[in-house]
Image (cartoon, rainbow, N blue to C red; front, side, top):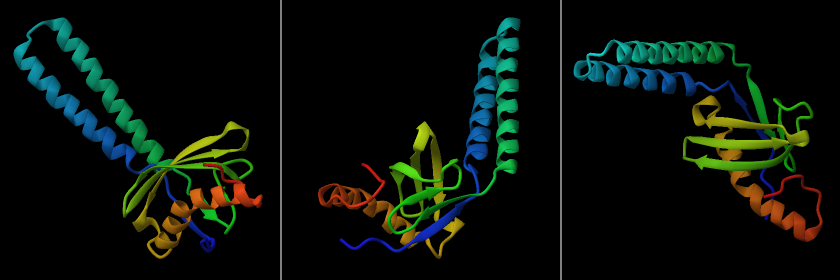
Amino acid sequence: MQRPPATHIVVSGPTWFAPAALALVLAQGAATLAYLQVQQGQAQRLLLALACTLGALWVLRALRLDAKAVPRTLAWSGSHWHWSGFHEGTVQRLQCCLEGQDHMLLRLHGAGGQSAWVWLRRHADAASWTALRRALLAWPALARRAAVDGADLDLRP
């Protein structure tokens, strides 16, 4: 099997988190309004108001984190994965947890027990998306072959 060519993608941050948190809080608010129509107790109202307030604060925190997100780079050198979010940069193990045509959810494991969840999207870098997917989907076979051949490849399935 021929190794995929070197490629990289810039990841801007968890932009999916804030809309998901907002949707959750809106659903919580709708459920709260429905519940208040049924229950008339003061204690229940206070408890639900507290839950909605905490949910709203969670959404505000998520929006702040999205605004502060530092762009990171995931790079395939042709033989090793590198993640700019790790101190040493080298990825020891990579798990593809969700794979779609336009998105991927990865879990990266670095040296020293570091780990990171990374959400990749095609529109972040459409030009290198195909090469990146090819490298991500080929690495398990490359790692198995390297183990058999005794080659230098840091990735372990």
